[in-house]
Length: 160
Picture 1 (tube, rainbow, N blue to C red):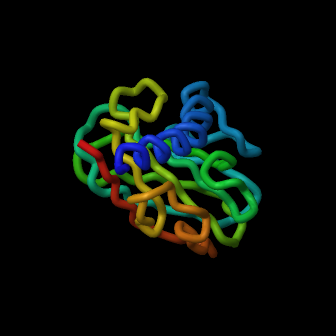
Picture 2: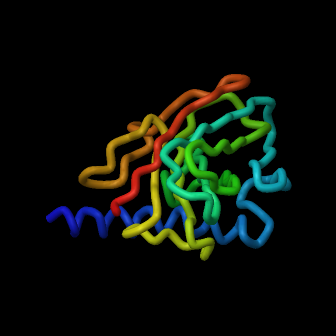
């Protein structure tokens, strides 16, 4: 039963995160403006989201984040993406130019740098460190507010 749940989580995450990873690897994003180099995206607003990602187990590859605004389909419809070079321990991501409001974040460690989520080996995490024991968390479980400068912490979890 646990393997079926993990496979389902992997499929759901892969759909949303792969779209963001592919766009980032091509140098663009699904949002409105140009991405800051390997750090985040700019959109209409003045808010800045700083994300401290802990539990990164190696310096291989990238940490990739997909940020959904309220009203987006979480995780597959996230329109804002950022990445940062992986480093053992804690890595920071930044999203700039955010309008005030509610958001949810999904992350993964693209350890082998292939722009694909390998659920069996690569780490994943969600804002609020939402529980993914039985299924991928929904927007409400991962919801947080951005108003001006905001900092959140997310821990990555690896299945092996």
